[in-house]
Image 1: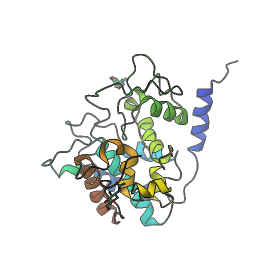
Image 2: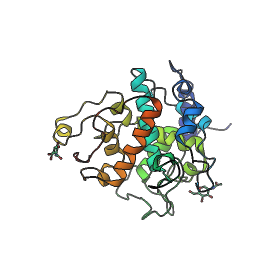
Image 3: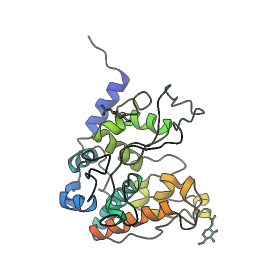
Image 4: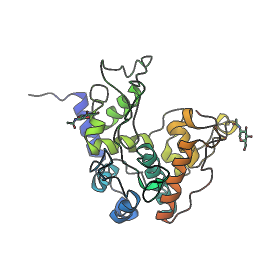
Length: 267
Ligand SMILES: *[C@@H]1O[C@H](CO)[C@@H](O)[C@H](O)[C@H]1NC(C)=O
Ligand SMILES: CC(=O)N[C@H]1CO[C@H](CO)[C@@H](O)[C@@H]1O
């Protein structure tokens, strides 16, 4: 008789979790039409990720994360979804200043980093050792990177992130799940992006001293603060904000305070 590997079992368990019900389906908060109006160019010939990031697969991936877009008032839910979609849009943007429909209509254009400067292997991390010859460069909507993120995401979602990191750019369901996993998962000392956007973040004294107060800017800090925060007028931060402002308008919600992280120290 076949025995089940731990990897298979964790896959099975995570599939079961995906059946959990929500009070409001995500599709009632972000319709296909709304999704299409945000991502006007994702399937253009110019976009390497054309036909990869579909609405249906996005919805399917959210089923594994029943708290996503399902916490707080209707405004809070919509704002969280807008913030998530804005951050993944910046991470995968194909836009430029004079692009058709503006720079913020080009999210989800890329599925993997084009010219990585390294293999993103932190060899000091013994929990998630790099597999020889593998690159842990940015892949998927959140551009998952580094061996420790691939390892932990794979464990949580049921794939071998260290030996098979390419799957994040080859399987759109896994790709969206890695982005949602990053969004929902606290990685100390960072809070989860989700908790920040739904008002569950409780700053420590160190956070307060570092100006890390709740808002979209803190989410940027969680995602890439080491390279982007505490810097005046950073282009990447401005691009993240531009996407969020456009999407918040489409969702008909306000953006909330602290959009920027220019006065925040990174974690
Ligand atoms: C916090 O923000 C203020 C401006 O609002 C700034 O003067 C101060 O330097 C910031 N503190 C840190 C630690 O970055
Ligand atoms: C079968 C397939 O689509 N393979 C692709 C997986 O992703 C890598 C990039 O990370 C591509 O080079 C492969 O072609």
